[in-house]
Image (cartoon, rainbow, N blue to C red):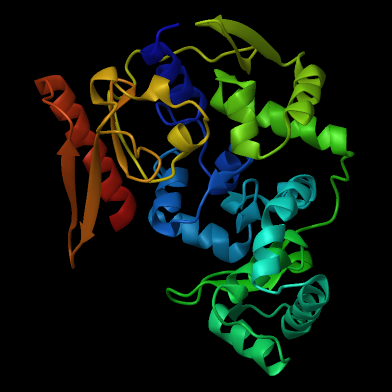
Length: 350
């Protein structure tokens, strides 16, 4: 496989090149988790993988709880489904806690303080309440818990990892939090090994071809866990050698549609870039310098590889997209990019 062929297969497996699903919860469950710290971009990351989706549909899914936004994996915010949140956080939280321990000591966030915080948040959200961040900060301060500097951010993140809180619906432009148990049903009591195997399967089915190193980067799990998960999932996966590296993907691959769009607009932190420790395959070799920050910038993908960046400006009756291409495009490529822009504009305008 060439780099372009690897990238093309990933675009199909990630449902970017072709959309087979209709509901936000369906694509989030298929992907396992979708990075979501940039909320506007994350909504497009979900929407562009669905058939005729609209921006408002993702807000609605957040409001009704069919998808939730919480800290999981490396850690950062991700969209996950309620059916997956409990076992996935239980699996990844211990590793995240190890990473966070040093910063917690610097902020004097000791276990006693975090327990007091969790208890105060739980009491405040009883009765299926959904409260904004400022409201929760006030409640913590009244409980005698200092929320200066970055302490508040880490207190909330720890409460998410401890499965005390998760996202609620939005109030206007403000995010809210709800009790985890109010939004996430109990069940799916996987053993540790079962949870690892399930996460491995979701990752390689939706993001293959990819390496073991790619998975450990994305998940934050150990190499030993990843190897055990691969061993348990081998019946559904197949390995291929690419440039001397073992890559894994779903054993049964959907046919590649030759009529799929040639160009796509991807948000910052999209899984097409952020899900891999090695991103060489998705960048045109001519543009390695220009695309060195491919994770952090919204990307223009042409013929399977990153060929530029873009940004949007929302006006009263218009969504303007400004391109910064790394090189010249052919007429066919230009037309494909224009079609991708129109698709994004339809998504935002609804």
